[in-house]
View 1: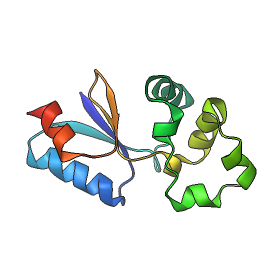
View 2: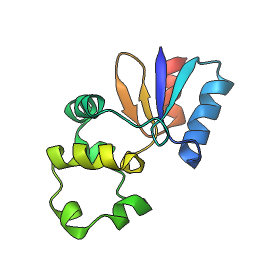
View 3: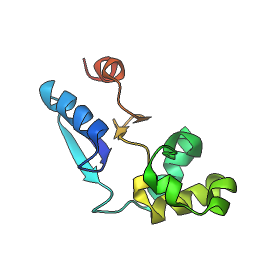
View 4: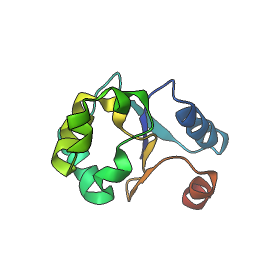
Length: 114
């Protein structure tokens, strides 16, 4: 089963979900702002994708972090920060069961699902 991870009010999430709905792709939606996100899952994502891909450095949550947290970030501290601040996770994270993909691209989704 395909799972898409993100938050409800994110514009990129809305585009990704609309694309999936419009192309008849069945998926589960995990709102990690409401349901949280587990450390074990985040560690697996970091191992597969790299923490640099997962951390959203453009958002207000990143800018609100202490400068010391931003300057000293590495894989271990990234996992801790993402668990504590799920809004830091770049959206969406799409889990097809075979691989994880971060961000939304119509071309990528078309390649994965058509």
